[in-house]
Amino acid sequence: MDKPKKTILIDLDGVLNNYKGNFDINEIPSIKSGAREFLIELSRDFDIKLFTTRNKILASKWIVKEKLDNIITDVTDRKELCFLFVDDRCINFSGDYGNLIKEIKNFKPWYRK
Image 1 (cartoon, rainbow, N blue to C red):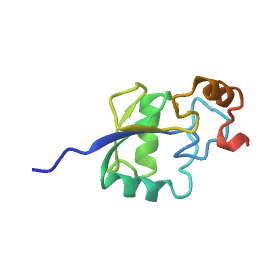
Image 2 (cartoon, one colour; image 1 turned 45 degrees about the vertical axis):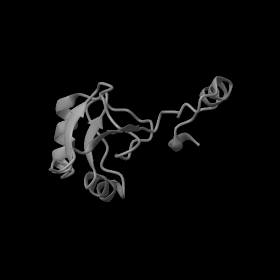
Image 3 (cartoon, rainbow, N blue to C red; image 1 turned 120 degrees about the horizontal axis):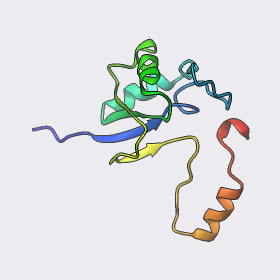
Image 4 (tube, rainbow, N blue to C red; image 1 turned 180 degrees about the vertical axis):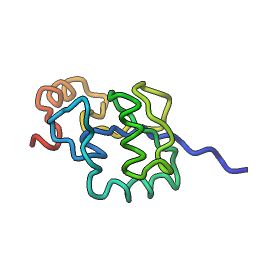
């Protein structure tokens, strides 16, 4: 019997699409170059869920439009039980609060550096 795949929640804006801080509630930018191949590779070993605060119907339509519906298994805006998160707006806590404060104060998403 196959062992169930671990789940990874992957953010949409700034990770999988061409978002650069120009949020439009009614439109999701196109898929980022290399994202499809990235998801295909990950899906071999992991269950992939889209993690976004965007409207679930709009996000689901984006998945279909970008031909990712056989790779991404669900859309959620909740912090669900998972192996890990992939996001452009996060900091990995290393156990040091002093360092964490510095990282938070100096944080910029990759597209603002």
